[in-house]
Image 1 (tube, rainbow, N blue to C red):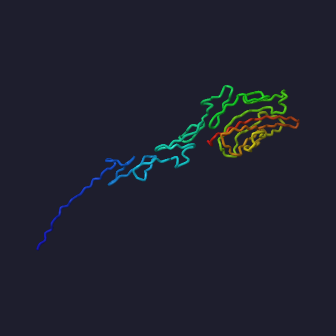
Image 2 (tube, one colour; image 1 turned 90 degrees about the vertical axis):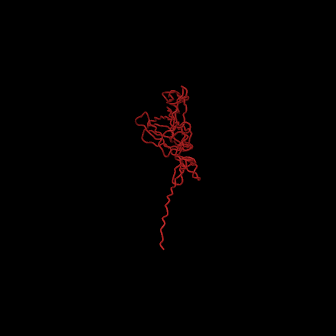
Image 3 (tube, rainbow, N blue to C red; image 1 turned 135 degrees about the horizontal axis):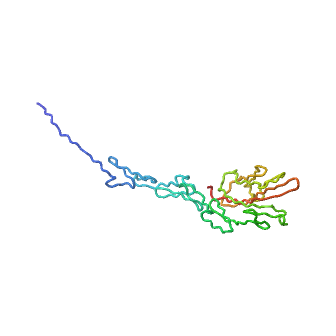
Length: 255
């Protein structure tokens, strides 16, 4: 018996992928089609939630403490930096002091505007108190002809400056120097007042100058008034003293 081979027909089956991103777009933000399925992704500043479809905002401020110099403000998909009053934002993250004495000087005509880190203050243009009289800008003298001046420094010079809060110590902050050099005399410098807590040290740098050194970190906002005295003597019983009155304002922040 002869067996016959029967040829069976061949069938080709074609499958067509469904692009879910076009038909329904189940993703909250970005959808990427793949064969037989899809993937969801999120825009910058967001992260995929556990359901793999929704997107949650990334709180960049919580993720890092170094994004902003002062304050980080989280926003949907991004963040921004903010500065305290008296400062302006520079380069997107740093805070720079605003010089109010240049931008909005509200001091009276008889006052001097002094800018400091984070603000400004108004001081009298004539800072002299009896028996002192104004000799030049910020310089008060007590004339020898006035009996009340006998035991007082001959002159008081008023200076104003500002430093950051929590400044690194030790730190040189101000130099005092004799303006008149008298031959055959000895100059001695000292902190006469304003150093009750031992925050400062006066280091003599030459026979006619000394440097005020900050030896303890200071926290602001705070104002220090420091009298730096120059005592001049010789072996002929000559004795004279002058004072530099430094008003030091410590800003509220370390920047």
